[in-house]
Length: 255
Image (tube, rainbow, N blue to C red; front, top):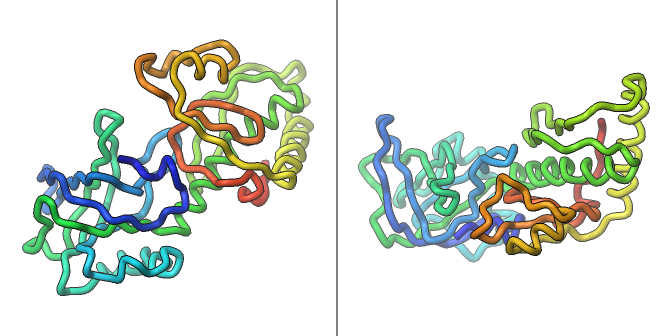
């Protein structure tokens, strides 16, 4: 169960180990849990930075903002209480778009989880917040593009911290307008950020998806399964990524 679809800002959760799979690389294991907060790379967004440990390695009731803030440094030091099992996640992948594989290695390869172990999953909150801001900014750009009446078709989105961008399909009526359009886009996007407004999400069936997508059902979505739909400042589209709660949380945009 992917908890990140419901709450971007859930930085810790308890889970149960359902299955473990030995991978080809030495010492590498895939862990499958009954639920997770860890986002696997996809939709142009990178994976979370995360760990899994036995629940008694820390106080699970501590605040997620304080207890997770040092996660990256803890991982760098292969941290965790030596008396407990500590698993460092190296990669996160979807399997059949329904199961999240937590691929990584144990701090001590001789001490591993057991099936049905209760564990604590933690993600780096700063990384999650940044990825959510960048991904939401990409969607906001689509809305701004429509509002300045430049009717290009959104294509590939690259929502990584190093050089994020959105590609559009089509041509400007006048190629010399490029710099002017970029300035208009930046101005409108920042106006929308200043105005703010909740980012809406819902799971929708075929008819509802078709309605929200302007009467056309996206050909890359399965028709027999609900799709997660997202609305950023008035622009609905299918998306399975993590996003800010309010448009103002994007803070600013530079094009």
